[in-house]
Length: 363
Ligand SMILES: NC(=O)c1ccc[n+]([C@@H]2O[C@H](COP(=O)([O-])OP(=O)(O)OC[C@H]3O[C@@H](n4cnc5c(N)ncnc54)[C@H](O)[C@@H]3O)[C@@H](O)[C@H]2O)c1
Ligand SMILES: [Zn+2]
Image 1 (cartoon, rainbow, N blue to C red):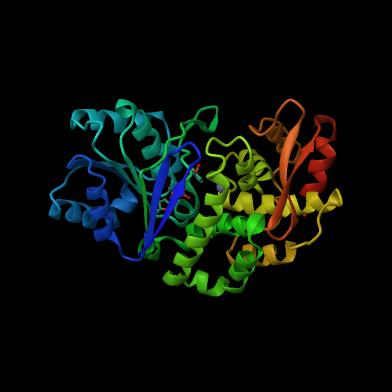
Image 2: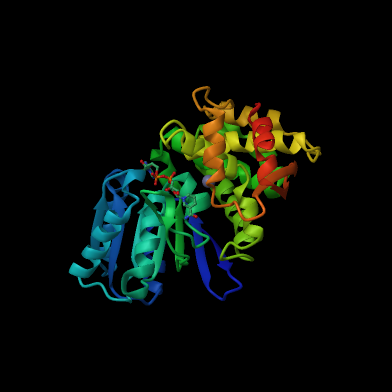
C-alpha cells in the first residue's frame, strides 16, 4: 500500500492511500483518526451488493458501529432529496461531530457524501472510498462536492476536504468497461495538460487497460492523482491554475447539455471536447504539436465517439455554451492545447465565439 498526502496552502490536508485489496488497512486508518467508534457508511445499491458487507465486517471486528445509508444508483439521485435522506438518517441515528462519514462509491456517492459531511453539524470527518475509476482519479480528492439542481448540474455544493481518501483498486474488477473508459478520459486529460510521457504510456497500454490489469490501473491512478494534486494544491478554491483541469470540459459541457445529459455521457463529451480543443487551437495557429490522431485512437479503442453526433444541432450547442459557468464579463475562457503535456488559457470575446466554436465543431 502506498500513501500520498495532499497539502493545501490553506493549511488543510488530505491523506490519500492507494493499494490493492486494502480493506483492513483502510479500517485501521479510520480508527487512527481518533474519531468516534460510531460511523456512517453512505453507498448505493450496486456498490453495496459487492463491497458493503466486507467493510461492515471489518469495522465490526475492530469495534466500530456503522449506520448504513444505501441510496438507489444513478446520477439522478445526486439531488437535494438524497441530501435530506442522508441528514435525516445521521440525525435519527444520533451521529455527532466526531463520527466519520464514509462514502463508498463512484463520483455520485463521493459528491453526496462530501456535501452532507460538510453541512451536518457543521462538518463531520469525511472518508472517501472511491469505487469507480473516475472517482479514483478525479472525484475523490480536491475538495469539491455538489448536487444537481433543476437549473443545472453541480449548482449547489461546498469545498470540503476529506480527512482520508482510501483507494482500493481491486474493486475495479467489477466496474463495467464503459465506466472504466469514462474515467480513463480524465486520465488522458491529465497527460494532455501536464505529462506527455503519461499520455503516451496510456496510448501504448490501451489493450492492457481494457483487460483491466489491476497493477497497471493502480499505476495510472497514482500518476493521475499526482498530476491533479499539483494543480489543486496551489489553488484549492479554483481561482487560477486549477482551470487547466478543464481541458475539453467547456466544449464537453455544451455537448452534454445540448444532448440533455442523455445523448452523451460526461466522459464521451470530454473526449470529444478535447478533440474540439485541438481543432480550435490549430485554427488560431497556436497548436505546436497535433496529437489528435493519438487521442482519436485511444477514444476509439475505448468505444467512445470521435465525431459530434449529427442530431446535436450546432446552434443549440452554441446556446448552451453561452450559459457556461466559465464565461465572464469579457467573454469565454477556454483551455487549449499547445503541445502534448502543455495547455494555455485562451479568451474569446462574445462577438467571435460563433466562428471560433463552429471551427472547433468541424471534427
Ligand atoms: N467532486 C469532484 O471533484 C468531481 C470530479 C469529477 C466528477 N464528479 C462527479 O462524479 C459523478 C460521476 O462519477 P462516476 O462516473 O463515478 O459515476 P457514478 O458514481 O454514477 O458511478 C458510475 C456507475 O458505476 C457503478 N460503480 C461504481 N463503482 C463500481 C464498482 N467498483 N463495481 C461495479 N459498479 C460500480 C455505480 O454504481 C454507477 O452505476 C458526476 O456526478 C460528477 O459530477 C465530481
Ligand atoms: Zn470531467
